[in-house]
Image 1 (spheres, rainbow, N blue to C red):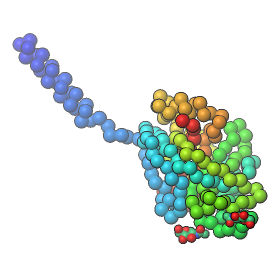
Image 2 (image 1 turned 120 degrees about the vertical axis):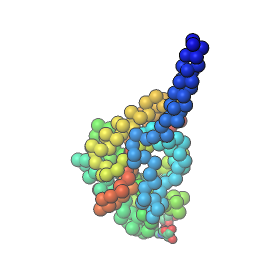
Image 3 (image 1 turned 60 degrees about the vertical axis):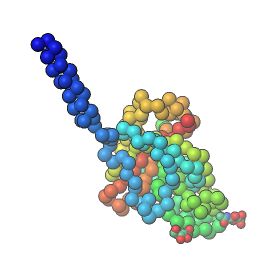
Image 4 (image 1 turned 135 degrees about the horizontal axis):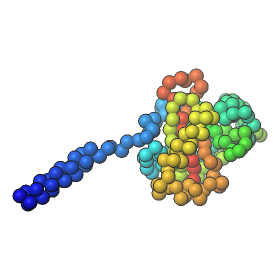
Length: 219
Ligand SMILES: *[C@@H]1O[C@H](CO)[C@@H](O)[C@H](O)[C@H]1NC(C)=O
Ligand SMILES: *[C@@H]1O[C@H](CO)[C@@H](O)[C@H](O)[C@H]1NC(C)=O
């Protein structure tokens, strides 16, 4: 009797274990928009990276070295406004408004960097590979080389408003708590930008928009 009960218990336990194994959730991501390849990258050149980890609520990427062209700091009442102003300047740059009158292809994304505590923003354009070696210069723009860079990323849809960016940046930092990356990220604070906002879509595109919050850090 006693033995029978024990066996029953054991088999119940085993079947529970089997059940919980069978029901272990697949790698589910908190943010359903994660892991999307922005559609813009089918038409335009985008910076390349290797995915180091697809985490819960974050992607960990290692970007290949690249060259970006950045505006001088732009004072604006909002990030959205600064992105517009910066983009106009960078767009005329690739249409030939540079010292060499060189035309370049459009790329994605356009990246905006906020300055903590200030309404000042830097907007950057990813240079096409063929222009990276010898980027045409312009008086009010500067070349920004990226070494291979570790970046924690969170994707989100809709329009990258100031509020959305702040909320998503906070969610990204939350999702990184307790991960193997957090120490390096904390250590890099102050040395690298708090976060960058990547816009992949032109403003007139209203659906299937992909934006990203990026937190670069040193490993
Ligand atoms: C733009 O990209 C196309 C296709 O890759 C290429 O053939 C063309 O030369 C590029 N134009 C410029 C100005 O770099
Ligand atoms: C731009 O012009 C300068 C001066 O003529 C030249 O040294 C440089 O190589 C040119 N750059 C490109 C990208 O053509």
